[in-house]
Length: 70
Image 1 (tube, rainbow, N blue to C red):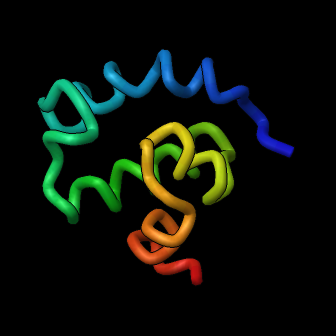
Image 2 (image 1 turned 90 degrees about the horizontal axis):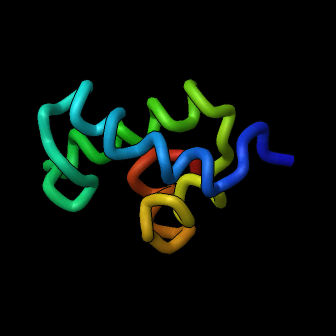
């Protein structure tokens, strides 16, 4: 079970994106930055790959591939 609801994470994503990368949204990030951003979501919110995929607007397969977790 996720530690935070999707809505909470979604509300925090713009600030996290700005503070880490100086960008306004996930879609503006480079592939390497997207991977780091997803790792930060996992660490900061105790999110699993399913939840990270949902809040980032990716498929599970794409999120798992980018995060190298199968």
